Image (tube, rainbow, N blue to C red; front, side):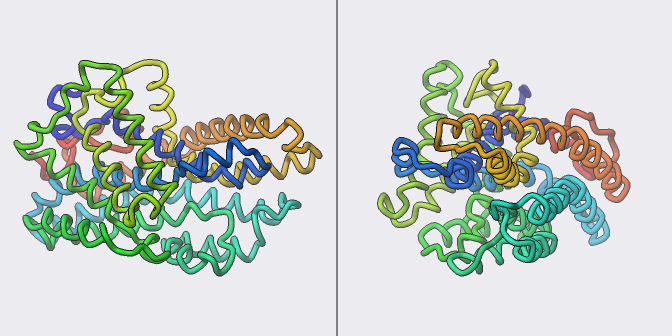
Length: 400
């Protein structure tokens, strides 16, 4: 925990990592219904009738907006010439590319192979469907294909990539928005949030929604203002019950909005983005206001650190485990279903750790070194920051 709080340093914020872990667990819970838990269970159906967990994606968006903006905005704000801006932006893009693309493309390849070689059940879909989805993901337009596929045709086993494409589009255009908007950036972002709050969300508008991203950016910008400290929830630091109630209450509120949709209010997506931003705001103070250190938090921090790999691999693992159960002639409905779920979760954890150690961490470090050379970084980066995917502001070029 930093003394100055999360707004003042670029170090990893434990509560942000906690939220990453919870966000990916929400997404896994959402996709498990039907994709892994395929048998009929009245209790499961009743639970999902009240709560849905796709809101984990919006929480991811808010986290991404916050983490990226708190370093990128001050870095680009100090660029005095177009050349400095170009170098800093290119360095940012290189760092994100090495962070995201290798793992993303490897798991796309795994899905393509599985659709041919391990697909007796047909769960992965046809090779052609997955080939088209792979092309869309590589081109970072999977969100547009996802919107087009809604109710019209099968997407394939890489459907979670739609949100990755949206984030990567954000990474591409956000530096230019910072450069163009300059001191008007908060106003532009606020107008973007308000514009999306009450609109009717068609499949296309759902696939290009940026309200949670923009709110995360606004939290990062606000964390540098004096008024920010006036809203610090210090009462959470004094009560374990209060921390648990706030964290659980906000997460369940988002899940209820996601599950009941328009039956609660006609603009649930905008409210989910706001709830996600509130969670990020609380986490941003870097005072463990969401959860104190302990065994549960350490597990969730591990999950948060492997959240990218888990996001990429959880669907192919679910389909692969069901395919395996089919080939072993084990019937999930005959008492073996929950064993299959536990096996899938354990396998996902093992593969996420391997993905992190063998692919993510070394290539992330390599990308950071290349980005440093491009952007002219003046100070070395502690490997702990590289492992978290975040960088101390004092190591950013031009930041004083």
